Image (cartoon, rainbow, N blue to C red):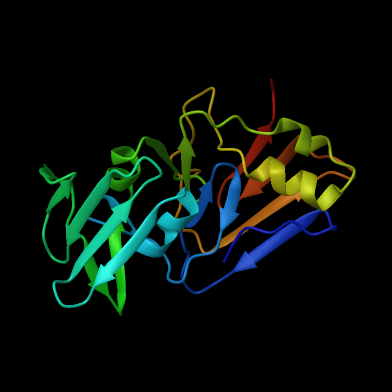
Length: 204
């Protein structure tokens, strides 16, 4: 479930399983199956790569996924193997690509960085941020006259702590969480996971 901000001051989400949300270049995207963490690696459905401007194809006979970027670099991964091939050259992945419930899942960090994208997983809210090297957040969106869109732009920015956070604040497994904005406010909000409330202020 994607984070949402209504016209009300507070948004609450309850679910049986806390899913990892994916934010690419400042926008939350929908995935056909939930990303998950396995052995410390975040696995994402290969279809997510289309949002990075990458094309992919699947060969059911050889169980091979082929990914191509705008520069025509070719990246191939074989289901169940940790060795991939970039332009025909073998590359060691940090986790194998594999099939889970009919969906090809690939290691997000390895694939995104292989094609020049940076990756940051924010444990506070369980959000995977993927950004191109030339991406610049559109901070003007936070000042939009559309309050809902302005608040969505605010929560689309990763949280960076200026201090060491309480260990319970970085609880990406919490099934309960709320975003709360003061009336007409867009640059300050509180995020609560049911145990710790974090005050977020957008600066610079």
